[in-house]
Every structure is written in C-alpha cells, then in structure tokens.
Length: 128
Image (tube, rainbow, N blue to C red):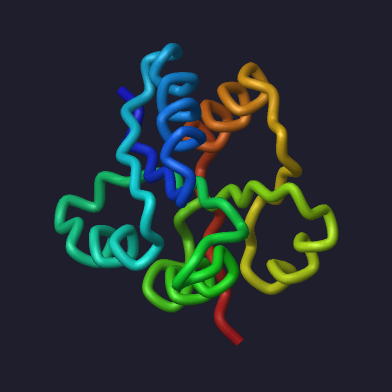
C-alpha cells in the first residue's frame, strides 16, 4: 500500500487533473490550493501518512520556494517534487533536496516518478 501524496497547486484545474492522473495508478492524493493550508495540514498530520509532496513553484501568498523552505525546517526527509514552467527556477531549490521537473509533465512521467519515489528508501541525512 502506498503512502498518501500531498499535492499543492493554486490552480484547481491542474490540481484536480494531476490528482486524477495519480489516482489512476492506485495512489492516494490529498490536494491543497493553498500552500499555507498544506503546511498546516502537514504539521498536524499526527499519523505521518504523507510519503511525498508535489508542489507548484509559482503560487500566491507563499511561493513554492518558501513552502519547501518551511517544510524542510519541519521535515527534512520527506521527498519533494517541484513542478514549474520556469526552467531557471530550479536554482532556487538548490539547497532543499528536491526533484525539479519542468511543466508540462507527461502523465506517465508523473506516475512513474511518483511510484519510484514512494518505493525508494529515504537515505539518512547527516547534520553538520
């Protein structure tokens, strides 16, 4: 059984579409159109049942970069995929241990990447 995926995208159409794409291969997806609400949910997820976060780069209120920065302070190990239509945005995530993918992302690529990340063991992080 797969862990749930947290999908954060301020565009409801894209969020619903990606959720449907992932659910087609049996994945469980929790969506948010607000990065702030998604962070609150993650911090309150006492069961720690989210195994992967997929987040859009450009969002109002809290950008993808700010979202990932705050997430990493609280949970440095959860796998994160950042989607963006701006290739140059990848540099903003250099220090946050994310997988960056340009949009549009093909449905089969999104499915394969997600399944691979959920099945991959998380390497231990070292602190300096």
